[in-house]
Image 1 (cartoon, rainbow, N blue to C red):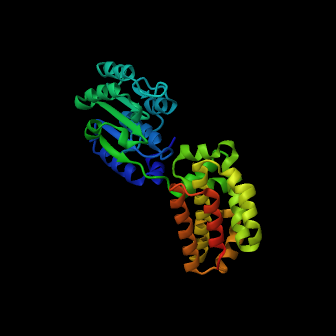
Image 2 (cartoon, rainbow, N blue to C red):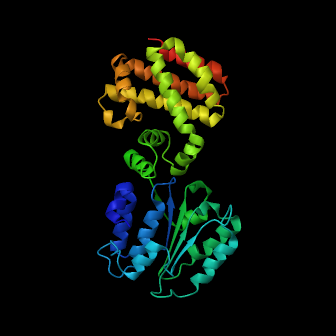
Length: 329
């Protein structure tokens, strides 16, 4: 279980806003939490439910020990209803179930909370049915809709909900979250550099692709400085076979850009921000042999390669040109 203070480390703006309205007993009847996966939407929603029900809260902070808090924590509170997609969508009958529940008084306190995960997956009929609650809220009822795709939510639902945007997790928090699930520190740091979306990070880990790609990028970037005659061979034998899909090619270029960014970080004294944390000695050597302007120029070469990739340039020719251009100077 987490306190509002702990949650504020992840989402300071969201937590500040919610705790203020809780303390003043001025909660809205419906909230729309939007933000990428892994940003704490569900944790905040459950904490909000605890504060809503808890009779012993201190300010906004629920006591965490009363029967309401404990049952919400364990997912068995009779007046907290969680709706998940049924297959690929949230269907009308699921929302109709909620509407039926709306008509009943809460089992114990008269209050009810509805948490709707992936609200963007509501079918058109389900979303239109949901508007009934939002347009005609009953007393002591709180709804929290959560989504990673705000643009897929009906404008009428937007207008009838208090919208709160969840910012991407701070880099170190995201790294800590990944490491806490058994991901190596090297891969966790790289994933945090590539994405702030937890689900995307987990997808990148599938099949061990990220670890293999990381190893090849490290080899390429080392060879550019120490064994330049080997670079095109490594490109042909390792990088191209590993990056057959467009998304792999894009992420591969992103990994190269993150390496060069690390070189820049060393030059400006930001060693604590390195992505390739286990390669610091190698990166320092490259930083000492390159000027600030030259590193910046190399980063721009990678950005230009990314643009050309989007324009369907020949991948092998694109990469050969990029590596040779980075190698110069």
